[in-house]
Length: 81
Image 1: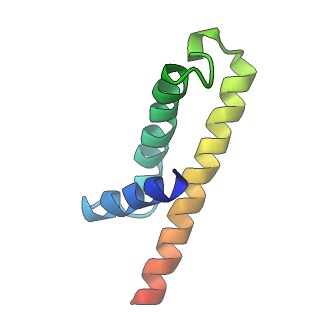
Image 2 (image 1 turned 120 degrees about the vertical axis):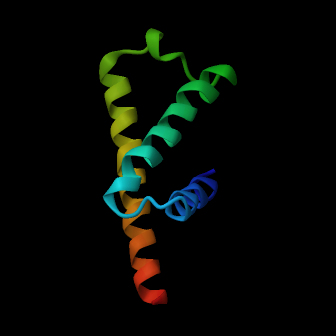
């Protein structure tokens, strides 16, 4: 799952989004899909049934993932140059 979303970060780069400009779209795709997929699979409640604190924690975790993926992508890109 995480590796697949890392590939999406590469697609954002191919679309011309680099560095910090790619973090928000990447976060939006990862967190947004989780908000749809997990309730559909009955793994988590929908956002409107969740406590705001739980949503904030979940969003924070996904934001950290998007930022860390961006940093890792930048490091890999720099080392391949």
